[in-house]
Each structure stands twice: as structure tokens, then as C-alpha cells.
Length: 286
Image (cartoon, rainbow, N blue to C red; front, top):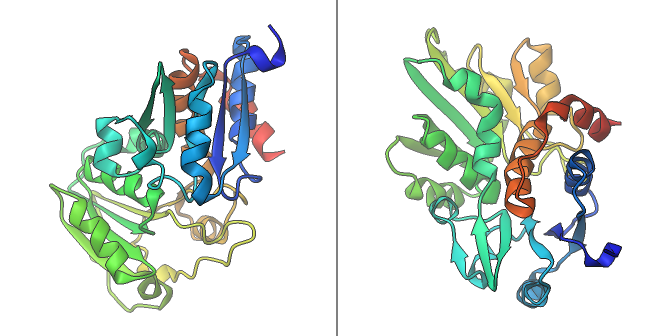
């Protein structure tokens, strides 16, 4: 079988050069001895439909991961959308199933994966402050709502936060602007015993080449967990300050690897070899 005649998948976005997905999937393919490859393609918004139609004609194309800014824009070009992705309103994985393109969302499961030990514990109350209202934020908000969190959703424009909050059912939701969290507050937090507080950055702010995330730690309850889905750099300013304050942190590689593992199974029909996670992390951070 030639290199061109093997099952293949890829990640698409704009920009895409920074993506670590090819390294992750390539690592797993090699460990499992699967004849396959995984690449990346720069796809501009106006070309998205034509790109997918072209890939549809390739019987060996297993699908693609979808990153910014296409997670919502891709949906009209798909034949079916998985119920989880439909509920979230964003697709990060497209699977080529026969003649059909099927949209999935593995971001939600990938986001929750490092939190599962905490979520296995009962809490008196759970609250999450979610910074951002884009495609990743949608997955995070729905995932945390499913775990019984009260949500505070903050976006650059209040109407963006309001639109996402209106879609979340079954839990209390509140909205704010990102500017609100950039300004100091003198709010006096009450006793947080038995309470799980999480602050999540789902914006690209703090990523290499982006402005820093303006955030004042007076908004963080004592003992909160700080989760930044940015993975380049791995240690963002948000996480660096959290560590300095003695808070528990989760970095962006946790979600990246978790969502990639779910997508890998969809593309290549086998579970990712997670016993090599430590080796993979070392490779990703080299």
C-alpha cells in the first residue's frame, strides 16, 4: 500500500500551523502499528464547503478534526449531526461514514476527562466561571451543566454570553463581560467548604501570538481549580499565577489529548493507547 493509498484523517482550521493534532494522532498510529496517516489543512471560511465535498470523494479519507473558526460554520455542510454535537451547537470532529459526513463533538468529553476524579466526589454546590462564548465554550458549558454546575459565562460582548446562556437547560446561568473579570472586585467570598469552584479560559487570549487574557484574581474563590484550554504556551500567564497562589491547575494538553482520543477511535476504529500519555506529553512539550 503506498503512502497515498492508506486511511487518513486530518485537522482543518484557519490558522492551522500551530496544531499539535498531527503529532498526537501520528504518535498513536505508530504505537498501534496502524497503516494510516494524519495531517493538517489550512481551510479558509469561504472554501469550507468545497473542501468537504472534495474530501467526500476520497474513500480512504476517514474524516477531520475541526478547529477555529469552523466549529459552527461546518455544520450546514454535514449530512448528519450526532445528538451531543447538536445539543452543544458545535462540531469538532467530522467522520466520513460511507457517503455521509457525520458531525461529532469530542471536546465535551475531552474537557471533562481530567476532572472526573473530582466529579466523582459529592459537593454541596458546584460553580464554574467560563471565559469565552465560542465553539469550545459551548462544549465546556454543556459539559459542566451536565455535571450540575451553576454557570457564569463571560464574553467580550454581553449578547454573546446571553445567547449561549439561553441554550443551557437545567442549571442556573449568569452572564458577564470579559471586562468584568479584568477589573478588581472587593466581593467577599463566603465559606467554600464542600464547594467545587472552577474557572475556565476557553478564549484564545494568552495563546502565542494573541494578547494576554486580562483577568484579576480577586474574582477567584479560595481553593478554586483553574483550567486553561490554551496549550501554546502550555504554561499561560493565567496558570502561572494560579500555581503561584497554590491553586490546582489543568493545562490545555489535558483537553487536547482527551478530545483527540475520542476522535481517534472514530477515525481509526481502535482506542488510543493512553498508557503512553506521559511519553506523549513529553513529546508535545519538547
